[in-house]
Length: 277
Image 1 (cartoon, rainbow, N blue to C red):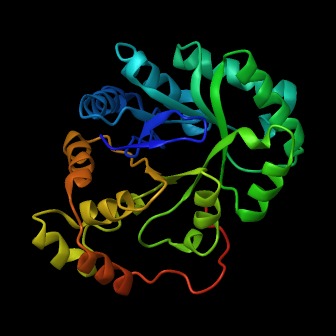
Image 2: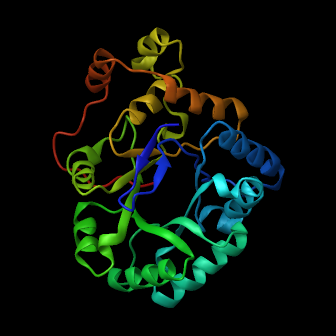
């Protein structure tokens, strides 16, 4: 598994597993656990979740899935903006740790920016880090101006990652946010990297997919895995989709392939509002 070195010097996989919409249906519980465990077995040991997903249900699924593997797993969770006050954040983290049945999170992210002053949130994150409840912290859905503000505040220098919507169809961050983060050694975590399987029948990818004996979705994910300083966290609850995601890491796109993809899916020509889902 190819890894990326965070600003804190920790090495993490560039291909992990997302859990959005998990933990919502009891009938899907075992399938979700099995999918996460297969992903771990295949080297996708980074698992991203959030207190928002299934209102804690996804964290409970993750807890069961990683129980035999906790030492191998790089565990990420996120907290609501309305829990971002100093005391609210500490309480939210304790609830997540309880649902996840673990003593610490490898990475804890503010899910998106709300009304709580960022300085207060950073103070709470520093407290959690000093207490050993989180090893690193970061943000999610922050545009460049938010990142600039965050890094200027006490504790901001310890932000290690920004999780944003990024895929072949949604390349807006390439205009400024992606290079800004790369210059400062801040990892980008790409959520919805295969656009909820919107690439499955995309005719613009078929020729390249055929050339590599791959699916169109794999080509879209492989393109993202070729980007510097980017971690991808596709979600899959089907075992074949888990295998498909992992196999995308082994596809070696050529310079010609990448040029064709740039032609078919244009990079931004101007500043764009940060896309969110």
